[in-house]
Image 1 (cartoon, rainbow, N blue to C red):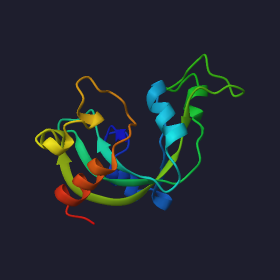
Image 2: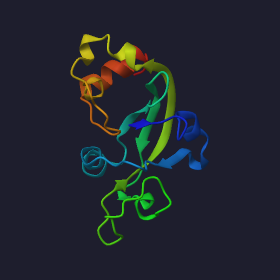
Image 3: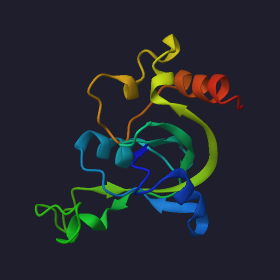
Image 4: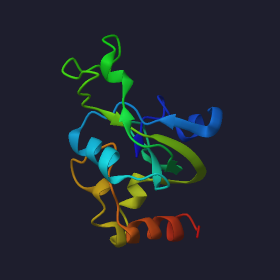
Length: 150
């Protein structure tokens, strides 16, 4: 799950009341579908800092809510406003995520050096999705080999 650290970083998440945040602002249908339809309560995800000088994995978060409409789509003054979305037929959904732990920062450039991650969606050329799945093998490699966690 990608977030711009000046908007919400792993440190912001860790400092929030209850250490939770709604994952708002997803405005890509494929990312929305992953978030809304594929993720489940209890699923863990990498908290990835994007749109910054050195992008990379900064920690781990956990899905802690069912999907619900992203309120930012309804407010005309919000940068995530969508005039085609209505309360009766919302287009954009979110889930709350909970802080699990901060990890060793793993830069994107480092992730690209491992053949075990060659097919990881995050590393695909032109990928801009803010939410995307990964395989169990990719998760295991990053958490065990790069972060030294079980």
